[in-house]
Image (cartoon, rainbow, N blue to C red; front, side):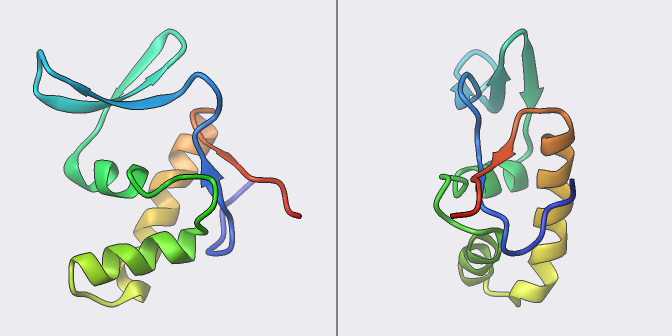
Length: 95
């Protein structure tokens, strides 16, 4: 399943975004797995709350970084699609 701008992502139960104080870096913790994150991933995942669509996430990032949403949105979708395939991200069911 591929994400769209209207998809609403969330971290599934047991998956958390955390700051690793030993390495002074953010990581995504999942059962028996850890993913190192760059600053871009941290910015995106910090907005993943199960209520915002990818479009809204890209819009918030576009405002924060003073750029156009259409530039950011494809990269956000690609990153989140990768996490979806690794089963450390899911989408909220359509209402």
